[in-house]
Image (cartoon, rainbow, N blue to C red; front, side, top):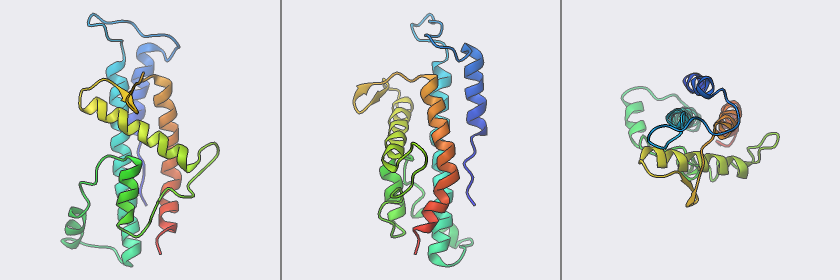
Length: 178
């Protein structure tokens, strides 16, 4: 069973809270004009994206085993991973495309929980991915081509969404495999 590990992410977010106290208001302005804690905010996004990517890969592999009716072993497993190992960041479109390889049209369809419909989940994952891409490529933060202010409360909300996604996604995805 796949596990979405948020331990390293939680460690960085705790360091971020300790730095600024998690209070409202802008953190201290630094000599270069940036704000204290931005690097930790960015690290949280990159770590969350990485954790989500690893988790989705594990779920996909488990779903593959279910679809094949058996567990793959080396070298067959290595060869199979090579066919999808560069599927990309965990954006909703990349996740949907990944699971289409197993005949699942939209792996998100029907996935919901309290105050979190599939469309809202996709939007959240898309926002995380867009911000991650801006950070990774050194560009100004934007979401849907609009400037985006990354704040601790966004990161905390994303973490909570990811945690719930991690609890529900595998069973949901496996139920879609015929």
